[in-house]
Length: 235
Image (tube, rainbow, N blue to C red; front, side, top):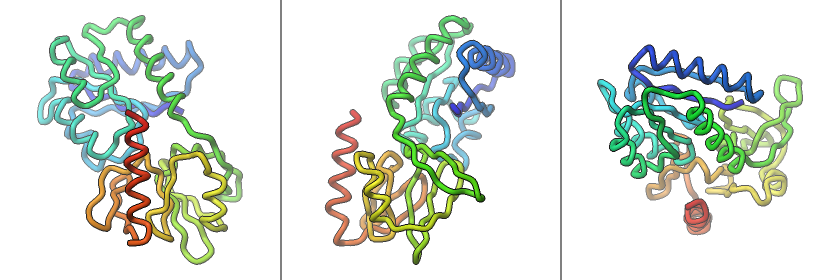
C-alpha cells in the first residue's frame, strides 16, 4: 500500500490528480490510498509520519507548500515530496526541503506517471524487511520501515507502528536479534527506536514520530552516534 497526500487548493486539479492516481494504480497494479487537503495548514495539523508521498501545490492560501514542506521536514525526513506548480522557478526552491521532483501545470498524465515511477522506485529502495506479528488472533506481516519504536513493559512488547499499536509477548533482546541490520537502536532499556523516525534530540529526550522518549545516560552517547551515522549514511 502506497499512502499519498494530495495538497491542492484548486478543486479541479485535486480531482485530476485523484483520477490520475486511480488510472496509475490500475495500469501498474499498485495499491494506492490517497487523502486530499486544501492547503498546507490542513496537512501539518496533527501531522505524523504516515504518508509515503506528498503531492503538493506551492501557491496556496493560509500556508504555501514550501512553508508546509519545511515544517514537515522537521518531523519527517523520509516522506517523498513532489511539488505541483505552474511556475518552474518556484520548484527550484524544492531542493531546500529535499523534494524529489516537481510536476508542471497543466498536468500531463504521461509525465505524471514517470514521476510516480521514480517515487515508487525510491520507496522500494527504502523499504526494510518484514516481520510477522500476532494482532487480533491473526498473523500480520509488518514492514520494519512502518515501525516507529518498540516499547517493553513487564513481559509485553508494544510495537508503535504507522497502523497503530500491536501488543506481543517477548523481550527487546530477541527483537534486536531479529532486526539485525535494520536501523534500530535502544535509547534506554525500555525503547528500541527506528532511527528513520528520529526528528530531534533535546538533552535527555529523543523525538520519535512526534513523541518524546527518554534517553538513559548509559545509552545516550551510543544512541546519538547511531543517529549521526544513520543520517550520514542516507545523504
